[in-house]
Image 1: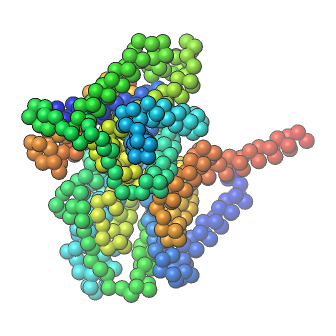
Image 2: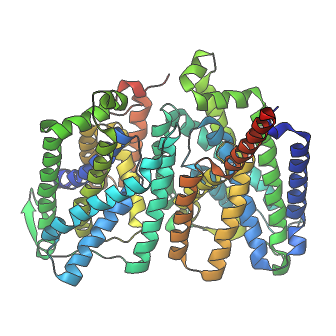
Image 3: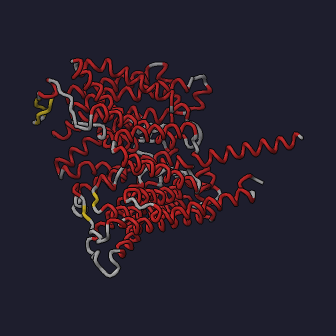
Amino acid sequence: MTERSTPRWRQASTAVWLVAGLLALLFPVLEHNAAYQQIGVYTLIFTACATSWNMFSGYSGYVNLGAGVSYGTGAYTMAIVSRHLDPNNAQGGASLFWVCLLSGVAAMVVAYPIGLVALRVRRHTFVVITIAIFFTFQLIAINASFTGGTGGLFLPYIPWNASYYDVPFYYVGLAMVIFAIVLSALVRRSRFGLQLLAIRDDEDRAMGLGVEVGKIKLTGYVMSAFTIGMCGGLFALLQGQIYPQFVFNPLFDISIALMCFFGGFGTLVGPILGAVVLESSQQYLTVQYSNGSLYLILFGALFLVVILFMPQGIVVFIRQKRKQRSDRRIAALGAQ
Amino acid sequence: MGALTDGVLTGSVYALMATGLTLVFGVMDIINVAQGIFVILGAYLSYTLQVHFGIDLFLGLLITIPTMFLVGIVIERAFLARLKGPEKTAMSILVTYAISLVIEGLLNEIFSVNNVQLSASYVNESFKLFGIYLPYIYLDGFLLAIGLLGALYFMLYRTRFGASIRASLADQSAAALVGIDVKKVSTICFGIGIAVTAAGGMIFGATNSFNASTSYDLISRLLTIIVLGGMGSLAGALVAGILMVTLEDLVGVLWSPVWSTMSFFVVLIIVLSLRPQGLFGKQSARVA
């Protein structure tokens, strides 16, 4: 029996999930400072994105450094659609949140042809192609007319009181996080998830064993675009204005990957942990010091340390330590 | 015709920078996304030497190329040599990205985010070629890039060390089996891959105004070049580099400069749909 499946471990992990869930639920009630509430929303957006990114890239091993394509597509969908809607309608603007679903669908529609082309190559080349496609999209956003060019687009202002403006965003973000986690957990336990993991371990062998690798990869890729697109939509609505370099941001791509590697690439909890720690600390540093380049240096250095000393992320690192401890204990028992 | 001339002249510089990148990938399985910021770093080094010490741009290369070579060696020893395992390539992207963030932050702190451009008499004076006026730097830069590429190719194909690099490029474990010190080859290769950015950066900095964030634009082009040429293929980097800039210029002249940058990405997508391994890539890269 492995250490992970002992009743005590399971109880402990249930307790941690419950406490974390409760804290997440009560955060806007406990924290009234609007600046910190906004940090909360950003953290949720990144948690959902990282979880969703990990559901494809973490499980299949195909590192996607173009997640910003889905994010930006979602954001622009929101911006373009919401301009035609009235924020002063009966639900007091809340109906705009439903457009996020449309953002997610748009991101999937865009992801499909990209996946068709990009997933034809092996994973090393895949990474590079996703970067190239990402910059293509940034260029389209800069040059096309429907995106408003470099000036970007303004979104309708929702007439809410500034003191609780972020609260609805917070709970919509939380709903997206829960959706992403549940989806990722379901995929992980399904036959489909096993096929993705098999591709990560040995694609040729998986293919030999009858896994339809092309179809599985494409499905995973398109699925993960949905949540990221929704988050892009929410982000656009929260910002009130978007422009190309802001939503098609290369730092977004790398932040998401970094969060997953930091927490634990391919694990369920890792991306959540990574996103919560990194995004909140980043936002906090920005609010406190408002010095962009200092932040870059810190962020990069921290990342280097993590990659070099805990190459599999914090979650796997802790698991290995636990396993070593239990192995030692078993060995000690055996010696007696 | 002007577009073609400019394409070949500027393209050779990109080819030089991309050769460093594809060499590193081929030998080490490492994708160095910091190549863009190294180019900028090289440009800033030339800038510093020129502005503060009054050293000529081309003369300064005698200092900046060895400096960048050493930077490459240190980074390889300190970080990249530690990477191993099945996720090595993916990890290398993240590590080099982290390195590039640190350098970007440092450059922003030291030089501020204001754009600068290298200048010299040969940057400002022009000559007439095929009906267009080009500053001398384009020609000088082209000659320098071709010279360095020639030296690189000579080293790779005519020296013993070059042979061991090409052996490591073809098959690392087989190279190790016949007694090649693959570790040493990797370290030096990375050094060379970075050293070319000193020259590339100087020419880039003299033909474009830049700041640290220009590196994003650069790296996306360089990566596209090596994917288009076939990752790990030296000839591919050369051909794709020149092809890219020429195409960009042609579209810019014949159609609209707004879309010129995109034309290359479109070609990339078309080529990859037909030939996933790139123009000169090895067949083994193909997957059903």
